[in-house]
Structures are given as C-alpha cells and as structure tokens.
Length: 247
Length: 368
Image (cartoon, rainbow over all chains, first blue to last red):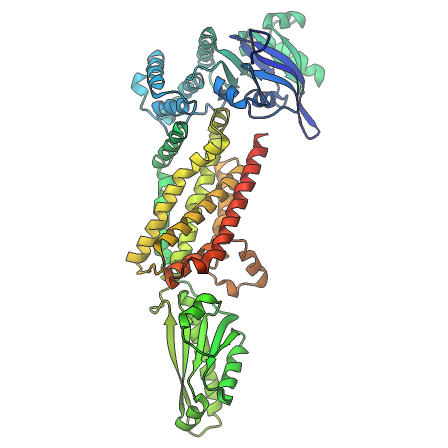
C-alpha cells in the first residue's frame, strides 16, 4: 500500500511514544521525501533514538500513524526491515572477520544471492580501491576506513532508506568530510538518507533538518530557511536558540 | 535458512579466531578435569543406612542403636533379606548397608569373634570411605567398652565391601561434577559473553534492524556452542575413561542425550544472562557468581549435600547441576536406565523451559 504522497518515503503523523509516565515522542509529525538527506537533530535525551527505533521497526508507537517505505510500522516491520539500512556510531562491523567476510555476512542476512553479492563486492572493492585489503581483518583497519566500510555495508543491499545514527562520532574533520561525500553519492543514487548528528556544521549539509527538543519537533525546514527564521548565521545558533528557549 | 547458516558460520569464525575463547573452550576443561581428578576430603552427617540383622539379639540391637544414635547415621530401613544389594542402593538414598551374621551375639560370647559386613555405595568414593571408617570406629568403641567387663577380649571383625566402585576412586565423583562445571562454563558463560559482545560492539543493533528474526539471531548464536560443548562432553567422557578408568556402565546414548539436555539448559541460562548484561564483563561476572560458584559449591560436586546446613540444602533444589550430577552418576557408575533418572530429567526440562520463557520476555522488554 503506497502512500498518497508519491514522493514521501517516510510519513509520520501524530507519533506518540510513552514509557510509563514519560513521553519520549510527543505528537511528532513530519515527512521525509524520497532521495533527500534528512537531518534529525536534537540534544541527548530529546527522543531521537526512540523515534529511530520506531522507524526501523524495532519498537511500536503508543499511538499515531507511521509509514516507512510505504509500509506500516505496526504490522509490516519485516517489509520495512528489508527496505532499510542502518549504521550507528559504533560502526558495527565484526572486528575479527575480514572485509570480505563482513560484507558477505551482512549481505547474506538481507537475503542477497551469492551472485549479486559477488558482483557488488567487486564493484565496491574497486570503487574504494581496497581490492588488496579484502582479506584483512576489520580490527587492523584505521577508524576512518572502518566507518566508510560500515556505511558501504549499510547500503550494500540497496535499501530505499538508510538510517545513520550519529555516524561521524569520534572521527576527524577530514574523514567526516569524506564520509559526507559518500552520503551525497548514496543520495544521488536514489537512497534516502536519514541522519542524526551532533555536529551542526553537518546539519548544513542536509537538504532539510528537524530539531527535536524534549520529545517534540520544534523546527523543521531547510537549513537556510531556519537560519533566516531565527535571524542567525549558523545552524549552531539555531540549535542553541531552540534549546535555550526550552530550558 | 541460507541467511541463518551464514549467521552460524560467522559465529564459528568469531570463536576460531579468538585464542582466548579457544583456550576457555578447550584448555580449561581438560585442565580442570585433571586437577579435580585429585581429591578433596569431607565430613559426614546424617547418612542414611539400612541394617540387615540376621541375629536380632541383645548385642546386635545395642550395636545398631549405638550406630544410629551416633549422629552420623540415620536408619532408613530394616532389611529382611538381601537378595539384590545393588537395587537397594539404586532405589533409595541409602549409602551403607550393615549386615550382622546369624547368631552374632552368641558367636561373640562363645567364640570371642563375630562378623559384620559393611557395604557402602562407593560411587561417591570419599564419602563411602568416610562412612565405613566412621561405622568401624563406632563398632570398635563398642567392643572396647564391652571388653572392660570381660576377661578374654572380644572381637568383631568387619568385612568391608564397596559397591559400584570397588577401587574407591574419587575420580568417579569428580568426572560428573567436572562435566557439569565445564558444560555450564562453556555453554552459559560463553554464550552470554558472546551475545553481550555483540551488544557492546553495536553489531546487535544492526542485527536487530536486519530482516533476521530475534529467534534466528539467538539460535544462530547458540548453535556453535551446542556443538563445541558437546565435543567437550565427549572429551571428558573419553579422558575419564582412558586416563582415570571411569566406566560408562549405563547406556552411552542416554548419557549423551542427558548431556545435550544439560547443554541446552545451560545455553538458555546464558541467553537469560545476556538479556540482563550489556557488557562482556557484566555477563562474565553474573556467570561466575550465579553459575560457577553454585555449580562448584552447592551441586554436591565437592561438598556432599547431606552435610550442608538445612537452608543450603533447600537451595540446592534450584541448582540445575545438582540434578545433572545425580543423573550422570547414576548412568555412568551405577549403570541405571532412564526409569531411575526420569524425575531429575523432568526437573531439568522444566527448568530449561522456564529459562527460555523468561529470556523471551526479557528480550521483548529490552527491545521496547
């Protein structure tokens, strides 16, 4: 069942998630368009992780309507899982498996055929120019490489959407820049990117950003518009203004 | 299914590439078995005995009373015949049978010598030895007191017979205990650590987001350990047999099946622990304190359960290895069949189902 908004790939309406008396997500409503890079910002504890878990089909909302890639999060979590990729701050590759084994493993659990895996594996090794490293253990690679690989693995099965949960935590600015090049490339290939970050300069790279404060979305727009609205020069200031109003 | 096999394969890679894991899996079990093969001593208390009195005179009654009132022994039953001595030990809790020869009192007074037979269940070698020594000491004490009033010294000659384990090998006791300990260690501790590792590294998140079902993830993680633990069980049986001469008198298939059951139980415990622990260290500590120590101390492995304070004796009822050790001893040493261990087996199955149910619940809560 496709949504009536053809180009909306994530559609959230009045999403509420409560844990006992605590409301982690308070009536969230937003849409993510197909192929865009959507920044999902917010301080720690603002409810980002809870929302991502729901979008990934790991957690069920208390109320509200949520559709991801055209599938309902209450009933069709399996279809959702097959159509998304996920990468977290921890990079999530197995340290004591080689590059090739990691890719084969993760591609395998997404049900890709051997042939597809082989073809895309060669493509990937070629593109990243790491053909000679394919039998190295992940543990022996520098952090930047692990991160690039983790991202490549997250989109290896060509998902419709990739969720990146603070993907650039703990890496240097140059590597971060390179990483964002990869994100753009993925977006150009039609993969929708849903990314959370702490770095406000990264927020500027997004097509649109939402800013969550205390479980609510306080702002959602293109970075330029947000800066205009709040009469400031950087996303950092936008963020501080919103967070400060609340506290 | 293909997804699932890929998962299992990956898990084997993890194990084979980590020297520490390999050491824990294969080095420690062998070392432990060899170390535990060599002895510990214990005291005895409230040991259940049976008496077959073929004489029923004043002397035998006095002597029986003295033995029973010593505090070390409790009279479980008076036997009227002794056709099949092994059955008496197999069926009940009786650890020693005392047999007075016919005309015991008369012979003692007339000839100055009478015979008494002490038959002990030596599947637990240390305890059997102690039981016989204690009984003998009581008899000698009795005769010494009698001799004060006699001119010619009287003599009671005990004839000792150890049943099930004539050679009194303590290894007979330690092989089942070590088996329980090692299977607990390998299965529960290693699974809980390996699942906790995935959580720690963040790979668990990725697995949960993937189309793999939680049950597939858990079973995939567990299968390699079932295989390895089973290899361990077989290794222990082989070392027990070839190095220590520990027999397998009962059915080997039953023995292996019970091992598999216990491995599954330990694994379900490991899964439960991993739902509680978020890091490898925590998983390890919970395993150590919640599993290893009770297995060592409360299962009857090192300290006989009969000698524990009452409250600890109650606690032993919830210690799975206790039942496993009883089963293994029965099968290996006494050669009993399923009809004698079905109750213990049932308890283990029940415990396993409970742990699985609890883990499933915990797992769901954690996902929320």
